[in-house]
Each structure stands twice: as structure tokens, then as C-alpha cells.
Amino acid sequence: MSKKIDTFMQQHRDEIRLMQQFHQAILTEMKKLVEHLVGERTSTVVLRTISHDEARKEVLDLYRSTSGPLFYSDVAERLQMDLEQVLVIANELEREGLIGEIGNYGAERS
Image 1 (cartoon, rainbow, N blue to C red):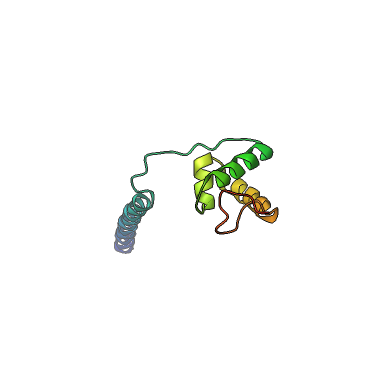
Image 2 (tube, rainbow, N blue to C red):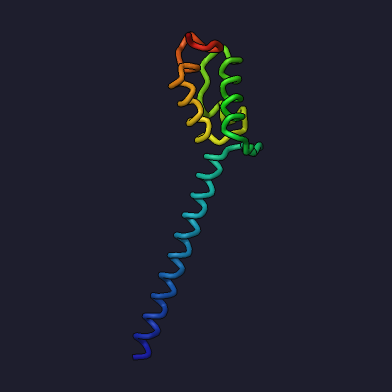
């Protein structure tokens, strides 16, 4: 009986060791993946909290002052605004015909 317990305990220790090695390998791969995704980013974007009307004015001003197309992510980054807020405002401005037509950048639609 004692020999069976000793064998069981050794197998259990071996399994624990293998699991620890597996977990360490997973952590190493996760660290590599995070480093790959983050890269060498050195800046942190601090989002501003501003009213909807103020944000709307800033988004419209940016579109009017830009001669080419803007991605929503570019607008959010430049104005330090939440991407979701930029999407809501840009959709409003598009529905109102103030932005959105290629070739009509920098000017309101008639």
C-alpha cells in the first residue's frame, strides 16, 4: 500500500511540474504577444471630458480645416476624445449633411 501511495505522489508531483512548465510557456508567449501588439508605443492618450456641443464644434472644425479624408480614429486621437463620442457626432454631422461627401472636404454641403 505504501508503495502505491509513493507512486501516486510521485506522479502527482510530476504532473504539477509539467503544469508549471506549461503555464510558464504560456506566460512567455503572452508577454511576446503583448509586446508585439503594443510595440514601442511611448505615448499615452489622455481623453478629455467635454460637453457634446463643444465636442461637436471641435469635430466639425477639424473636418472643415482638413483637406482630405479623416478616419474616426484620427479625429479621436487628434482631439483627445473618446472614439464612441466621435462616432456619434460624426454620424450626426453626416445626417445633417455637414460632412461626409468625398471631394467636399473642408466645406459644408449645400
